[in-house]
Length: 115
Image (cartoon, rainbow, N blue to C red):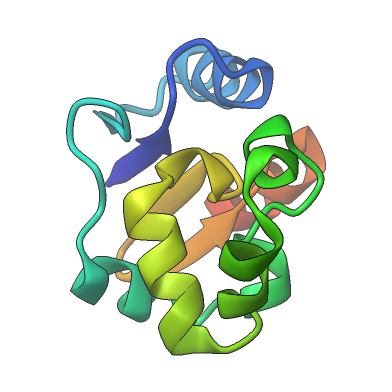
């Protein structure tokens, strides 16, 4: 099981704390040190809608120029934008048994780990 994100992201911190409190071990992969590959992002997109994976509310997105933002309208362009700017990927991304989940809420994780 892997948890992808950025260590100083509040949502990632909450997810990591929840996992620790529930005795669940997950390898943490830091986007800053190991950016996801195109194949990895495409695999996530096979289960997570683009609108959910691409974070258009964060500062990184707002700092992108209009042309770059426009490229992200289609999956292929969005993958390129996410590779070049991993901070626009909504965090965290959880890989549990080949199933991918994005974001964090205690309720969401309770459901994921009760299966």
